[in-house]
Amino acid sequence: MRGRRRRALAHETRVLLLAFAGGAPALVLALALLFVDDHSAKVRWTCAALVVGAWLGGTLALHARVVRSLRVVSGLLAALREEDFSMRGRVEGGRGDDALSEVMREINGLGDTLREQRLGAFEAGALLRTVMEEIDVAVLAFDDAGHLRLANRAAERLLGGGAGLLGRDAASLGLAACLAGEAPRTLLTVFPGGAGPWELRRSRFRQRGLPHTLLVLTDVRRALREEERQAWQRLVRVLGHEINNSLAPIRSIADNLRQQLTAAAAERPDDFDDDLARGLDVITRRSEGLARFLAAYARLARLPRPRLGEVDVAAWVARVVALERRVAVTVRPGPDAVVRADGDQLDQLLINLLRNAADAAQSTGAGAGVEVSWSVDGGALALSIVDEGPGLAETANLFVPFFTTKPDGSGIGLVLSRQIAEAHGGSLSLLDRGDGRPGCEARVRLADARTANRARAG
Image 1 (tube, rainbow, N blue to C red):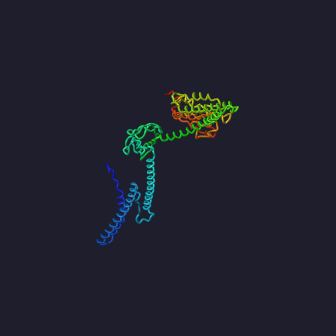
Image 2 (cartoon, helix red, strand yellow):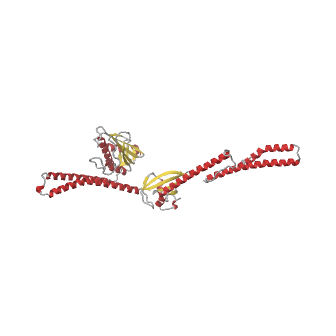
Image 3 (cartoon, one colour):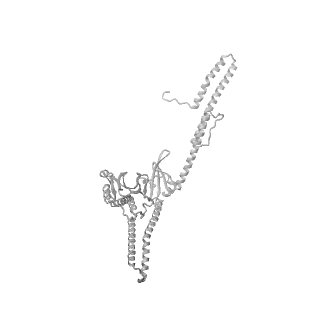
């Protein structure tokens, strides 16, 4: 038709027309034979009415059967869409192996599968909600427009609100800065429910096809307090051990000398003067050792804040390597780079690590050496000191203050070195060499480093 599209017929109408069309040839033939033969008018019209009635009745019955089956299938599918899995399809008088029965079986099986999946999802969701409500970590979810869509109980306590928090934007909640910047990181922000510091973690996920941002804020004070308590326990244990080792001989020798001094002059042994000199010498040595120990503790406790400046990495490594002459130290140069740091503290860090590496290399005999290398990755300097020593035998107490396996060690070298690295936003770790050879590798990572070309361009 011109200017208009012909409207498509409904499926039921097409079925009805096809049924009519299918019986029409037989109807026409029956009527033709009826009127051609020599019958009376009454017989003709009676038979014609019966034939037409049978044709119409059969056609309408076929139409009703087809439409009713389709409506049953449609109702079952609508129930599945509405998550009503209690309905079941059944074919009345069906043999069980016909097409309609197979369709009903497949729909029933689909309903069972969806019901099991829904039950599993419901149980998993209930477990997730329970965990989120019980954990003492603030969990918040924001949509792509920055509006709060989910907050657990810890988050509500942190933000000082309840259900009224949902729907508010991040800026009004004081969390706009949490949706930007690097993550994870430490956040020093005061919220109505706490002052922090907080460990911020952020990730992205999609819900119903829409992007969301998940924020996790952890109060690190509890973990810090536990770490502090353990550190104090270790420190007191080491301090007590060291002080007792010095005081025990001093007390014993002092008691012995006092007994000899209180004795009559005639009862004193002939070697009294020699015993007195040796005893005073032991007291002096142990007192000096205790004084050195306490001085080392004071040095560790009073590390000043770094005074930042531009430090040329190659010059720094060459300067410190030149101080170590006991073993051969090989420098494998990395890129020309500078790091923003305190040069004096970096010298102390590298001196400590090189001294430990040289001590380890010397313990294995002649020929063992040390290798120093560095690289710049992601704006950070990665420095490696590898020795050919025996490797790490004791790892649990590596960074315990004043713990040492060396007869003349102070036990603060590694602790001080790690403290310096962390003060520069970096880290220090020790591990056995990964190439299958004996030895140890110290890895230092310092933030705010760049290659010399970038430094000149800046």
